[in-house]
Length: 183
Image (tube, rainbow, N blue to C red):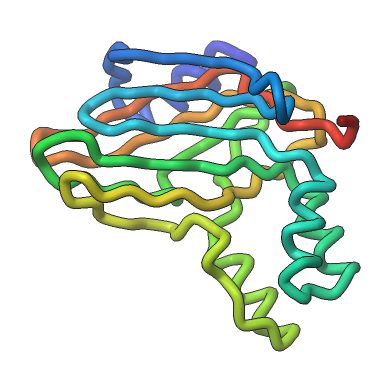
């Protein structure tokens, strides 16, 4: 990644505050990688999902095999957000960015983008995808899938943000690993 690109990302996302706590581990039973960040009264957890897990999930809900394969062709990360603080927070995925290994900056594919595609095919299903934006009162949480356009096995940096009554909280999770299709 070039320095001008990193400066551009920093300007777009705002000044990054130091993390309160960051943890990365691999679950010994499932092999899934987890990233957990707690900052600004919010806990953000990412869990990398293997393509066969994603495909099986959608096949199990009656999706046509071709569409289940298409969804699984994206890097799928389960994203959980929990408001642990005393104030409401608001996130907007359209403000999140990820930077691929070759320096390309993109937005995650949002629930609403998938919903348009699925609706055109007569599928009325959407609870599995994280909404584009949401406000959490203290104690509220949500967890769902988010799609990233990177090859399975690749790594990317995720620039996230949310709003609090006291201002914007931004951060970067570096080297998020997209699960490969190998168990």
